[in-house]
Length: 466
Image 1 (tube, helix red, strand yellow):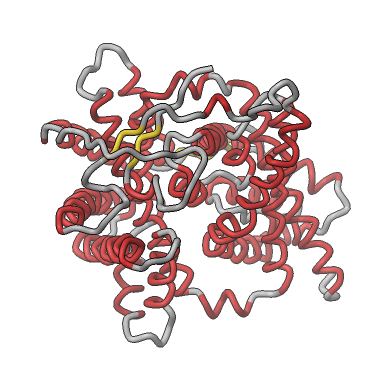
Image 2: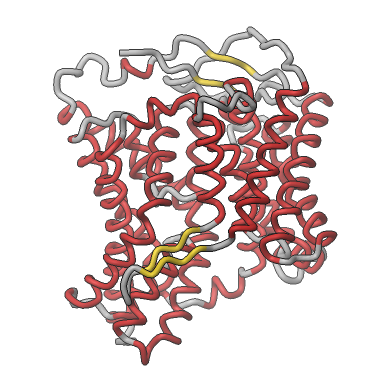
C-alpha cells in the first residue's frame, strides 16, 4: 500500500464532499516564471512538430489500416521528453504546472464541442431514431468493469469502463475526480492504449463482425461513430471494403453517428455512465475483491494535498481571472499556430475563434464560483456554447464562422502535449497496468461497438427500414 497524492488545481476539487479528496489551507510558494516558460515553449515546439508530421496511414492489409494522428505524436513525445534521463529541461516542476493548467484547457475543448452541438442542433433533431438510440450502446463499455475487477483493478475501473476513454471523456473524469485520482489514472491508461491499438483493433473487429454476425451493415456503419475520428475511419474502411456498393450510405450514417457521439457522448458520460459505473463498482467490488472487505479503497487514502493558489476552487478573485486569461492566451497562440500549419486555416480567424472559446471557458469557470449551486464548470461551458451557436441566435453566425476555423484535433494535440508532461511524474503507476490494460481497452471498444450496432439493427428493423 502506498499513498496517492492529489494535486488540486482548477476544478479538481469542488465544494462537494468526496471520500478521495481533502483540502488544506497550505498554499504553495510561487514558482519561478522560467518553469512555466519552459513548459509552454516545449508544448509549442511539440505541437509544431506534430502538425508538420501530419496524419500517417499505415496499410496493414486491404481491410486493416492504422491511422496515426498528430495528437498521438504530441502525447508520446512529451512523455518521452520527460522520461528521458539526459534531458533536464522538463522535470517535475513543469509536470506539476501542467497538472494544474490542464483543467482550464479542458474547458476550451468542451466549449468547442458545445458550439458544434449548437451549430448542428437541427441535424440532430432530424436524424432517425436508430441514430439516436444506438448512442445508448456506449453503455456497452461497462461490461469491462467486472473483468477489470477480476484482473485486480480497483477504483481505476470507473475511469476505464465508463466510456470509450477519448478526449472529452478524459476531460470529464479529470474534472470530476481530479488528475491524480485512480479514476483519472484509469481513463488515461485506456486513452493511451486505445490511441495505440484502437484503430487497428476496431478495423479488424469490424471486418470480422460484418462477415459473421447477423446484423445489417447500416447498423455497423452507425456503430462506427463512437466519438473517435481515427476509429471511425478505420471501422468504416473495413465495412466499405466488404460492401463497396454501399460505401456512400455508410459514410452518411457513420458521419451522423460520429457527430452525435461528439455532441452528446459527453453528457451520456456525465449523467449516465459514470453514475452507473460507480454503482456497479460499489455493488461488485466487495464480492470480487475478497480479502479487502473492511476497506476496499485503502490504497487510495489521501495523505497530502497541494493547492494552487491561482486556480483553486474556493473563490473568484481578480488574480484568478488574470491567471486564467494569461494561460488561455498562451494556449490560444499554440493552437492557432498548430491549426495554421496542420490545416492551412486563416491565422486571424483561428485566433479569434480561440478567443471565443477561451472567453466561454472563463465565464463558465467564473459562474461555478459565483452561483451557489454544486454545478461543475463544464456544464456552464457546455450550455453557453450550445446556446450562442444555435442558428437564429444573434451570436450564432459570428461564433460559428470563427470557431469553425479551429480543428478539434489541433486543440487535442496541444492539450495532450501538456497531458504527456503531466503524467511523467506518475509513469510508474501507469506501467503497472500493462497487459491487463490492453485487455480492458479491447473489451471497452468491443462493448460500445457491438452494443451500438445491436441497438441500431433492432431499431432499423422495428421501424421497417430493413
